[in-house]
Image 1 (cartoon, rainbow, N blue to C red):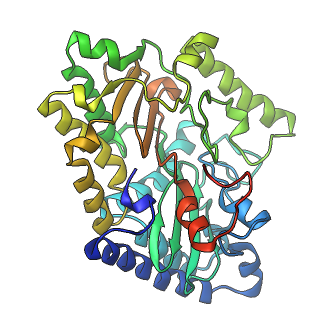
Image 2 (cartoon, rainbow, N blue to C red):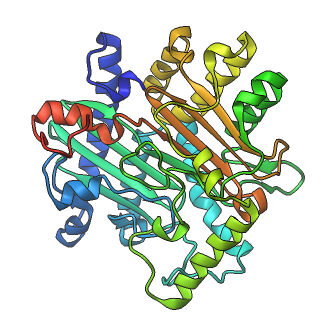
Image 3 (cartoon, helix red, strand yellow):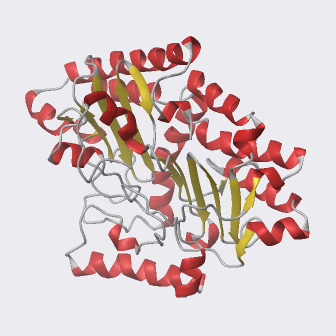
Length: 399
């Protein structure tokens, strides 16, 4: 999709931006690692990226459910270590991105009340603003290293190669509730801006344009890609029980998650044909940027930026500049499924040669949203990493 996700061949300003971000990450990562005890290190630190084996498999594993994301939780850290951990998280985000992530973590308290403090997921507390995991892969002061931060509704995956940040995807934010009222008026909507932009683009379409953009009048129960490491043509939405670290063996938890799945499937009304209609495809579905008017193209750019703008400011601005080019935006497609009015269950997708965005707001009667940004070619920085290390030349190497 972008220079961020491809080999570092950009000019000096671009490379300087990547290096500046990587240096901040390295400083924050080293301070966090240095604060750990020997026991904490065994949980928080894995081997460097690019070395075949269990540690690299773990780096390529990500979740967005309230499951074990792998790493040291905020619970297991001292307050000083929590501060250092959040400094590293902040180094991977713009100010707006950090504000969004921090708010998402806090909504766990709201969700706990909405569920009458009764959901435990087999833990002491099921909805927990401290159940977020940090894991470092390799040495933050080294040439090649990575780090991952995640918990319910957050997944950040960052790779540094040759002293430059080369990958920040998959990147997942979500919110449950998607919106809730404040005292005295106003709404808490951590991801509402993206939803509003997509709906504004949808509502601006002519009848002919909408016929190309709207794939279904019903929305799926979740994002189609799930938490897959690699994306393939024809992938359909997985069942909810599969997006956890291992299947539940305790009957009450297994039955609970599948009851949620069955309930949401019932609301979607999807059949096999509908799943195929929204399946991931190499050839994008929906309406292409080249077929949009000037104002519509501006809205599409703003919609993309509401996802790519999560990353640090220097790189965020580079991303925005790339999509300012008409020839780049021409090949980006926008697709919609579900209701068109706010509060109705809906889903949208933005797909181009190097970008795949999915957003759904379907669960909890259309008040629980998921928003993911990926580079289907170079997630986890595999293209740059393999070239840099000259390894993985077998069937696992990217095409």
